[in-house]
Image 1 (tube, rainbow, N blue to C red):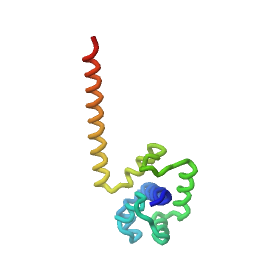
Image 2: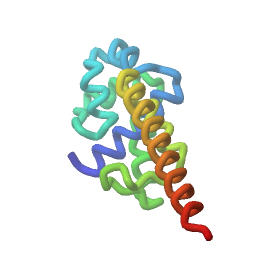
Image 3: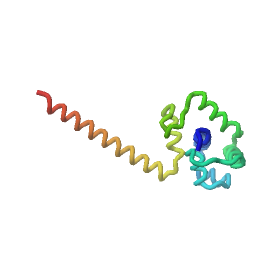
Image 4: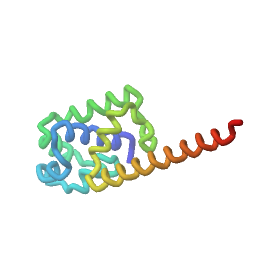
Length: 134
C-alpha cells in the first residue's frame, strides 16, 4: 500500500478514537468487516470511495476531514517508514489504540518484557563497571 493509504488509515483511526467508537462498532455502523476496518487503519488495505463515505457518515464527519488530515501530515513531513516516522507520542498512542484489543495486549506485554530486559542489561553493565573500579 502507499503512503496515502497509511496516512488515510491513521486519519480514520484518529477520528474513530476521538469519537469513542471501537473498530467493531464502526464495522456495525458501516457494514464493513472489522477485519477490513483494521486493515484500512493499519494502511494495509485500501478503502473504496463508497467505504470512505460510509466511514465518514458513521463518524458524523465530512469526508474532506479525512483528507485534510492527510494534507496536514504531508506538510509536516510525516513519513511511512515502517512506522518510524511518528511525529510525537500522541501519534504512537493513537496508533496503539487503533489496534484490536488482543494486539494491544501483545504489544503491551512486549514493551514490559523489553523494559525489563533493558533494565537488567543496564544493571548488569553498572555492576560490571562497579566491579572494575579499584
